[in-house]
Image (tube, rainbow, N blue to C red; front, side, top):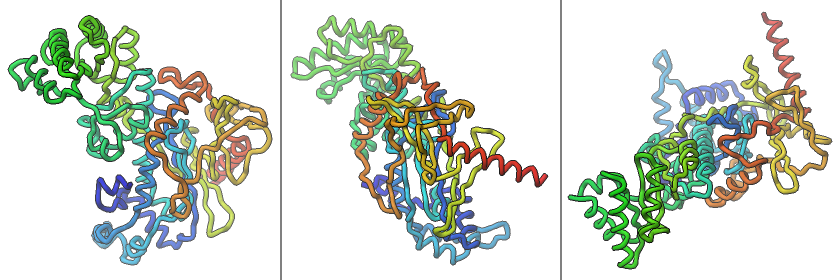
Length: 494
């Protein structure tokens, strides 16, 4: 099912920056249509002061690519664009070319739910230089945000431990699409449900919710409000108890709970949304237990994140369910994942590949040439031992020799027979899907399995500072050679 088509009902081919189209026109005009390219999409720095991300958004990328068409409406709009001289920016012949364009590139990608580290490609695309260029903005838009939100959710769920986490962020999300995308990504990352009903419909995510303070305020008394809610929804009754006085609200909720029990139902929970959540939850738990409501859950909300949850647990909070809104769906305090999309190889027709490298005085911004793959080594229990980028046209040989990215003077040597898995798998060939994309629940399971496979666990507050991550020694040698050649060429021009 194509959720993008359901949501928008029209072409998303213009979901791009103008300069992608102007470059595409330049390639077309300079007759570079036979130029084949390889691009990689990756991030340089992990968010939230951590070391890892959890890849997400691939299914959305595939939906976008499978429906990629420049419609007559798209072309009519592009025909209206003008240059500085007031003349059309794009000639009619180029627009006709776009109208006939059909996506036919190859895509290899890391499966959704995979833990990934800086500089490792989440996605590799190979095909027409023009097509690869056109896709840059949309691919980054989709993968950057979903990967960021999934990563934030994993951190929050790690802090919550075995307690369920609910995503309540729609009203604070960055627009309609931001809300839906965040709900999908949060579910992948481990949230047990969402308040977002449209996300529930589109993605099959369990929907959860209580009531607002306005419900209580609309009645003459809190007791009447609780009673009316229980009568309306006896099979889904969680009461918000802090509209006026939290402790008296808890007592009134208990009274309502007795009424529910007498009528064959139960008080599912109470929700705390303000005040000292540690102290109030302790008192709430004591009051509920004393009244015979040991199984009634204490739900907490109020601007929570992984740090607040950890502090509350440290303080002995008796909270069963965590409702997370703003700081999850906005990825507080890291506004965006700095994903980039870099050209790494070119060839004319079926000729030899020529590798490309973006040079920078900032070492972290110097890209890696080649047609890259990520090899993850693991022990007999499946626990990660290290990751190594290598060039598929110059395969590693012998014992793995990883030149560390953080410090190229250091290397990690592994036994020659060390087990491994290559992370980038074939997703599309010639524009056609060649693998079955998993259901969200399977992606959620993968996230949990990935965390269990990390050495010493993967804790939000104790990241893998010493995890071996680097280049195959042959790829490192090639990269250094190209850097030196480019620097020499630059010096000769001065």
